[in-house]
Amino acid sequence: MNWIEALFLGIVQGLTEFLPVSSSGHLEIGNHILGLKNAGESNLTFTLVVHAATVLSTLTVFYKDIFSITKGLFKFENNEETQFVTNIIISMIPVAIVGLFFKDQVEALFTNDIIFVGFALLLTASLLIMSQLMKKTNKEINPLRAFVIGLSQALAVIPGLSRSGATIATGLLLGVKRERMARFSFLMVIVPVLGESFLELLKGDLSAEVSGIPIHVLIVGFLGAYLSGLFACKAMINLVSKAKLHYFAIYCIVVGLSVIILNGFF
Image (cartoon, rainbow, N blue to C red):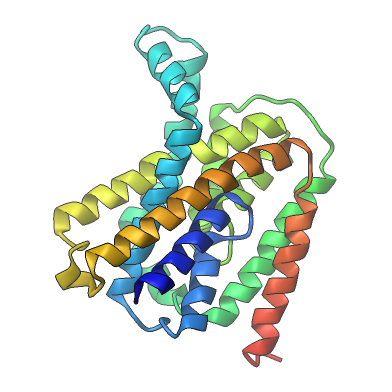
């Protein structure tokens, strides 16, 4: 992987992490187009780096919210901030189970399977359409709804099934207010991704010797993902509040069918 490829894939990751079109699916498509689909450990390392960049984008956009939540926690009382963090923790249970016990099996099954990515994009489109048709309500995120939303995030480990799309659509189908669900969806991913990044750093898997990718190439990919992620995160909050998810459903259908047809499934 050279720096131009890293920049391209980083921008793809940043844009698609927050837009409900599947960042992992688009990275697989990008790797396929660039001929990097069999790069093995190097692709896993790059994916981890650009995911960390989009988490930093989230921290940048929501820094006021995070500060407010942290301040509320240190009041040591059962307030809105404590309830929010409790729901975030509950939502992380499914993805923690998948990450700790089934990560390798899932990656082996779905990584580099470009046709499966196409079908997963069609599933993302279906979820977005169903959530768009859902009558607008104003329910709160309680522990049960947080757990169900967490299940959708755990399933989104499959490339092509959008994490933001699955979690936001699930929340809307459960009746959660649009603006509240977008905020919850973007904040709930911070701890899992940072946790995975920290574990990889401890193992030394981000070194150039292990990944085969020079450090300056990783930095270019990181910056591309971070800057494009800033734009996409802010844009997505606005789009969710205006109920315009069906445009992304159309996009997922077009890309999903194109991937399936061009790779000779039919």
